[in-house]
Image (cartoon, rainbow, N blue to C red; front, top):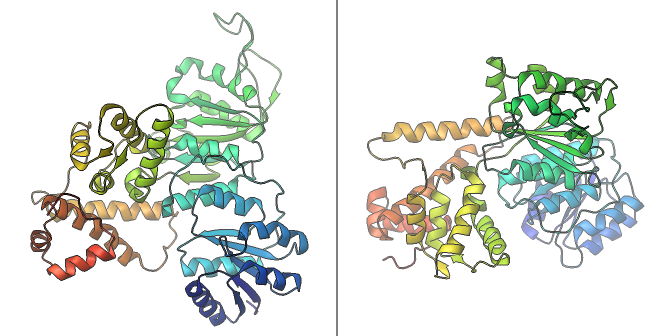
Length: 479
């Protein structure tokens, strides 16, 4: 790749230094500034082949610069970085014409890869429309959620079929709605149908509609979901439960772009984006002969995996605050959780995922008089839950933990479609195991760091250092 001039705008001196060193090693000329005004002056003067900009800067929001850059120099590509890691940031960056959005902290190798693509890729046409600034449909800033935000931002301007996979309660319909609400069909209807909730004999009528007299009881014509979703989005939830014969008709719609109602003769042109979702393993259903392989490939054009809540526990505090705020707006008492209670929620396995957490927060607001919820209340609530994966003990030995870690790593590779992860996976896994291990030991020893250090086999000073480094809260009321 030939040498290029890259303009970097970020008010963080450390980030500017890192980017300067990394990009200069690739042979690029790097110009750096900590404000938007200098960046804009360079652009006006015709300098730079690529822009890398932060969002929040002392004098101007980096996102507000993008439309002006694209108007003045349409061929100049812009990479946006931001610590405001929300769906709205990703959507705004994409809709205003950014080449790519990267959440902070970013992986340096990934950024270099994006830079290489930006310098060699054709220029895309930006959209003049801005994202709706209302309440976000998705909550969380964990790396797993960042991947979802970026996927939504990339897919919102297309009509590609999307297949959303995730456990029950993870928010698959919220992702589907976000794709619709931020997409080019946002002015059309969003129509959802749950395949598991419709009797098998009525599926085709529900989807494609029926004519008067088509079957016993069909006293009048009825519009199907495809007709209702005209110009908008049709969300097929629990697609894995769709009867095989209905799958054949759905495949024809995806292949030919048309359908006929039950009892009808004239084909009707389909005009809706298809988003499907399932909690089931469609590959296994295909092997069992219960799901059409050709339909799977038609639906799985753009796959999105929704992680279970146990894989994004860093989002739990934000979710709790969100659900508590919603409950308060509905007239329930306002509640907050102390640090120990919040940490207990992070260690829970959440078999019901986000839906289970939402129900718990509402229950806390409705049934408990205290304004601050402590860990004893959380322990009582979780003890009454239907099922929680048992914590590994001496009887289970290291094999159970090893299997759990292996499963977690395998799921990581599956989520990334077999691509090699960025460097540092070993340290990342160690950090993910180390924090809950220390927290669980502190809770078991009632916050006694001397006892906890003995159980862990650590020096007391080493334990204190790790508590600071891992930002583990001190459990209130414990000695």
